[in-house]
Length: 141
Image (cartoon, rainbow, N blue to C red; front, side, top):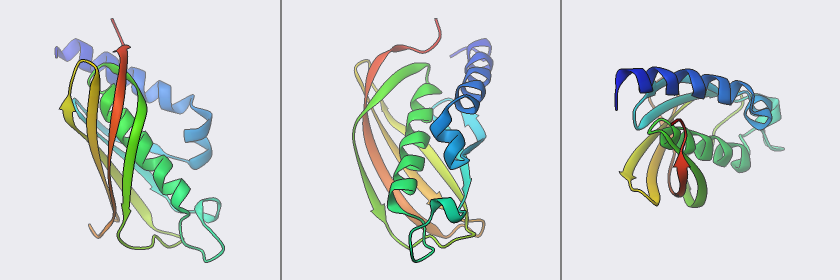
């Protein structure tokens, strides 16, 4: 992919996620974008937690879906989620600063497969997931 396309994709992804109401609600931020790899951040606040002040699984699954979907977008492909699996390795307590890395494993013409991993600032792994995405077409022509 050319540097010009990568620059356009980076700008487009930044704008795309700034204008996404659900991403804004969860306070997900883009930290880094490379072709086939995106790093997102989400600080676990009260709005992300359950009764036990641990992050709700739905909030974590939303972060995983967003990280893997963004990794697909970084390859200049519009996608929708077909399926994904999440392994919750450790509970994520209130106040944790999570980093979610989405990585493309398979970049096909009809489907894409991605992985994601969540770590805190110390590198402790909290969750791992994988997903399959259906390719709708190019993001940018």
